Image (tube, rainbow, N blue to C red; front, side, top):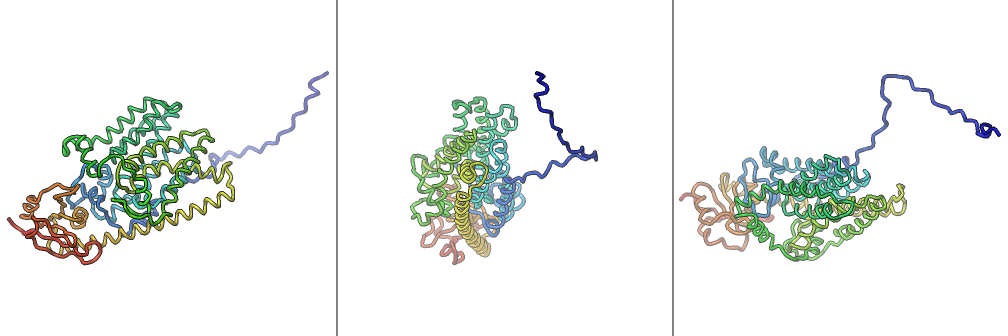
Length: 504
């Protein structure tokens, strides 16, 4: 038998004619849209439209901004604070102390920072997950409100997000040099903003690098430790030059924060989600439960994200961010007796990625959207956005009223002769001093840095005013000073400014 006759004859294959040579390279086709970058840009635009116009600087912001601000004396810098945010805004404050300029610059920087932090994850997660995670985090009222503010918490969140991503990249690809450089730098950035928080940040990756199968790489531990020391060096040096040592500074910081110990603050954080910037003491009723629905759903979405990551054979991309988020939240949920929503921004940033993974898995498990779950999720997200916008609108409105009050009070002080160079003390003095261009000096409280005798000595060569709230007598050292009323409206209704006698 001739075997060659049993084989089928090959069919002629039609080929397209070769394209004429024109000297041009063939077009690669349209590039996919950079969705995370577009989402981060939208984040900046939302800040510029909803938060920046007309808002003023709060108390903490005036402390940070005054340190290197032009024509504004530096306010007392207490033990818990770190100077990272001051260094970030220094190029702006050195030119002008105007709140509007600072707000605009920070809105642009915060959008760029969000994009940069998510870019670290581009080799770890699909683009759709990064874009949705970016949108979930960026549309929280907390993120939008603090994006253009001179506060360190959002920048700590970016550093935590970047550090966790770099750690995973360094574990998965030992030749990833960018990860080996980026990991200690991200940890250093976190420590520069808030040194104690950076310790909680590196805790989980350190344990993972030493003991967790699949994530073990002990060589990363010295890199993280070096980044931590590099970022905290300024804080440690200042502890020895101003507070009597590192332990003394930590002790004083704990006193100012009400004592570090077992305090169940979970309920405080939940109640603060209705728009309270600081809930201390947090004994207010929970009047708007709808503002915390997303908070209760977040653990469920994170669990769904972990399942989705396991099915995609990349469980560490969900488990590690969730574990780091839990670690960074521990001090603010269990160790202090008050709450501020901004404290949990690092945890929310980290949890946004597994939550987005879980949402995509629910809506499109096989890459195609399922109509009913997608419609339900879209409706839920729309309701969530409406609530976040309502809380944000209320907060920005209160901030604008606050700015008007402080501007009016500063104008009244200037009218009665309290002009730079000058000194303010008493209630609201730290914040009002920034608006008036005065120095702030307190004789009691967490910002205490002077004595009554020193205030009287300053009055020999500059105006000194003591701010006293309504129905309150001035302290003994100021009872001979001349009272002058402040604007009879807003938060300064009934306040009086006691002016020290000029001269020796």
